Length: 515
Ligand code: XMP
Image 1 (cartoon, rainbow, N blue to C red):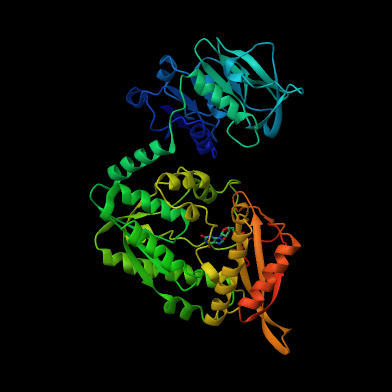
Image 2 (cartoon, rainbow, N blue to C red):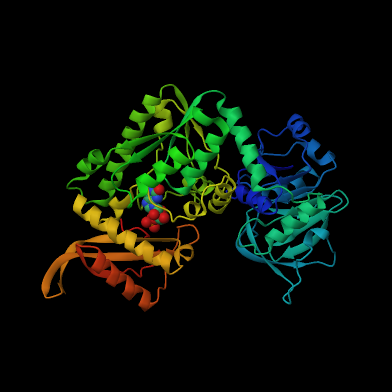
């Protein structure tokens, strides 16, 4: 196994992800924990030193145990990790005087060749785009090292001591903006002797062991939304500890057509899980009566959700852990990339704050994974493909697809229109191409004519977007035929709607949901 020593970079998890993609098992451990004894016990086959925010020049800044460099194993230092290597192996790092570099840069090769760089510098341009992010720079490389790549502001962009298999790069090969970075990791793990035989199946086994070790014989409760993340987390935990797990499914009356039945049937009947189906429609819809402000809606739902969850969780009696389907992107988003204050665009709905209030500890078995990896794990656990491929659905549900006041009548109309729209998308084989699609019911009635009569009914908007992570999105370019056919079906099949529009706003400036 491979050890990643984390010096606090925002993108350390991306290194782990690149390695998982190469089917190499790795673990990330914070530098504070990694001492000589830890290294001996862990016995890594190779080590990667991550980037980090500190400066090696500062007194007391983080280091790797010196013994690491005597283990005879390959070490790759990235950014701060590079500077740690240089400092500890006898080179010199200095403060940047106009040599700080943030963002895109181009590295060109030197006369020397290195197996780590197989597949690099092969294009006509003979240079590779990389992503730099450093203030300090190496001014003298350590004895035994040679330079293999340079950039205008980083004369020691790629250095190595091939004899000892020590490699140090100034840039971040793990990020998207270093397009050929994956090749570099592939070369590194090959040099280290990994065969790439580690799979999601193995991850499942390890995760199950870890859950058992963490919770022992204690009870665990889990909020199940029917979304992919909480479902995969629940199935995984259930596999680990069986009936020590109880799931709470809160039906706030803002779910899609047939959704509650689907979730309850699947988890209770198919997976035999202990599931509390909390039917709290009256409570939520009552509290939302007369509310049309989006933030008030979100906060009302968020607060009630916690109350209801807490009430039912208390019924389980003696639970010590709360399971959540937190993913890695949730973890990084919550620490804020810029470091500056971020503006709240929408109050996201989650059960944050609940664990402390209830004295619960968290079980988050998906914390290291990205969405597509969670889907792969879900497939590994045997969840139906149709379930795993479902579009994301927001916690506040249909409330934020019903601008203005929420009424049961509008929700019923919305559910029916949404079901027709999604059916259309599936029939045309477009579901998997689209990241998210839904109908929003508009708070206006418009005049129409059907048969010989006048109608005065609601208008609705169709939304469909493509996206990678929901942070940015583009509207989906349906054909006019598709849109026309869908509008006709909705108006014919859904009483209460007599006008259909298509929302062609991208994000930004729009958001995906309407509220
Ligand atoms: P926006 O509307 O902010 O949505 O562009 C981006 C993605 O997040 C989903 N979303 C939520 N998910 N709780 C959730 O679990 C929420 O409060 C929430 N608000 C938006 C939205 O459906 C889209 O996928």
